[in-house]
Image 1 (tube, rainbow, N blue to C red):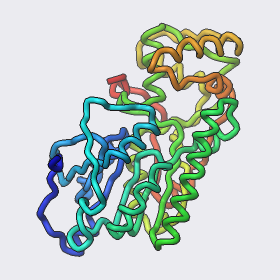
Image 2 (image 1 turned 45 degrees about the vertical axis):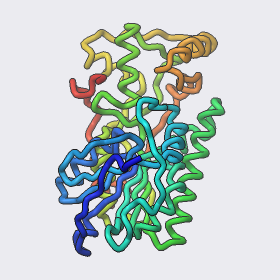
Image 3 (image 1 turned 135 degrees about the vertical axis):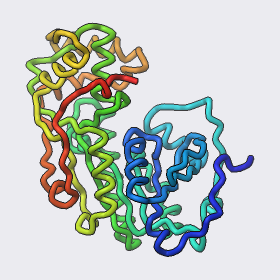
Image 4 (image 1 turned 180 degrees about the vertical axis):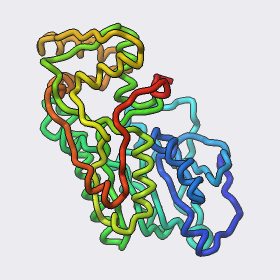
Length: 329
């Protein structure tokens, strides 16, 4: 089967090679915000995706991931796109080092998948890799939900493997751990709360829902990724990147009601009933990731200091202000 996205025949000078960035997971929510920022900075982008993407211009050249790697990504996020026919591809099919070095890499897919791409990064002469992880490695490591414990373990193990590989190959690494990401009506956090309220007209609470949260806008995450790519002092560091405002879970949801032009309507539910309700909601595909652990965390603070990111990356996140742009798409 022919390559679905033809590579450019352009040969790059050493200076132009330094401007080329490889992005894996480019069709993710963060990727959608990041690609335009890279273009504005004059960076040429080789974007990798499990889907077939046509040329979009603006210095972005698309490549399709191999079949086996796509399956890993599909397993990691429990989604499968049966409408997209994928093909396998060997490392030799990617640009050769004498033609197209890619020194800088950004990885936006689940961090535990990155080890499958170490050979690709080595073959392309990677010198720096910026990787997204999550503060969930800390907040879910003692969860009552075994699946959440597994997630926390995979995040922590993924970070350790990235650091070990990078340091053993002379590659600079930067790991960013966002808190609760929202924005553009396409996230799996605030947007899902919006969808629930629209559908049912209320939101269930366990206890006072007083646990503190720091929602971070996806555009601020993308800006942090770009800064991490360029910052010399960020090399070989991990950063927590939280939102610009700390607020109780209840107030966070109240603002969702506000942007929907609805009066807040909360239903206090005992844990026994909450567990039963969650079991029922999980029958609906959109809510299959819900668990009773979510209810317990409503009363737990999940706050992270981002002063290191502010110092080294110029990270300055916006406060939690919802607008019509955050409505579900």
